[in-house]
Length: 356
Ligand SMILES: Nc1ncnc2c1ncn2[C@@H]1O[C@H](COP(=O)(O)OP(=O)(O)OP(=O)(O)O)[C@@H](O)[C@H]1O
Ligand SMILES: [Mg+2]
Image 1 (spheres, rainbow, N blue to C red):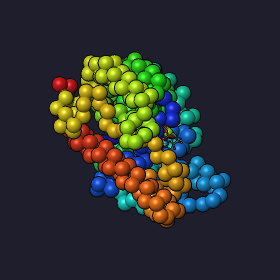
Image 2: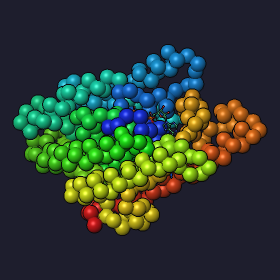
Image 3: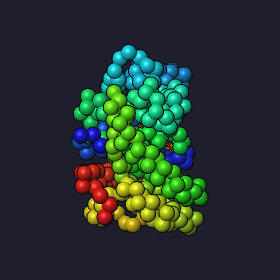
Image 4: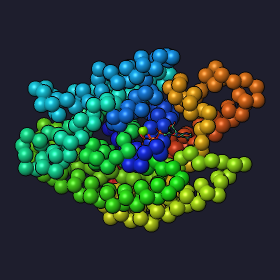
């Protein structure tokens, strides 16, 4: 059975896409079969994972935007009332990593946002809309089955729209990437208000007879919070700088004081001992990921995780190369530990996952 893990924060630029790519690759290198799902119409993940190396930016953009089989073409039977059933997407193998696949995004996926929003509000009463709320789940399950996937990592757009509401509520688990600043504290605060509304919508949707009997039934899932990841803080002599440390602490406080009690009330946590078993503390921070500096541009250029870039790709020699290789090993360990925690947390059967 596939485990669907959403990477969600409606705040933009907190490294959702970058983490999806680096983490997904790491999970695949540990022998898992992983589909990276690009649900963001910006298609950044598709751009990170896809394509031949080329100097021609226009050719690269065309390749990213014009995949034949993607999230939008996959959902078209439901959203464009085509007389055919939803079929699995032809995911694209990610070069250089066996067991890693991309379910490409599409810039036009945003066109379904309004229709889905109406369906999610009114589908209980309008027959013609009943197949929409369950359609994304149907597409993902068929695609996961075709590729025999253990994990789907869903890279979400920075928004609180109906597509994200649907994606989060059909996921088995979710991760919240953050950056160490005031806006992430704000985002944790607003998530504490939004998630209960989404959860209560999902509970009523999955219990409505009209949606249960739809061609694509809306599933009954309680998405479980895995934890937060703090990104991109600067390190000076092995220590976070004081300002970043202050924001990391504030994020941790917002998570433990505001978000966790709300998630607990909504049955969106794993049992306490499951977190403890992975060494996760009460502020639910899974990883702190420092600034990739020059590695990030090379990673994007070569469509390779920061920790996998070869000396040729780094294009460096001598002490510069040695220094960067040291940093790569630190990042490899960070992502390896993160992947191990996620494997440990998600191997808990949701059936037994009642909040302690
Ligand atoms: N640890 C890091 N160190 C340095 N730069 C990073 C790091 N993580 C991400 N970035 C850079 O920060 C920017 C935002 O990252 P990314 O696109 O992954 O965020 P996002 O949350 O997916 O954004 P959006 O909300 O727009 O989808 C990108 O330019 C990325 O290359
Ligand atoms: Mg992104």
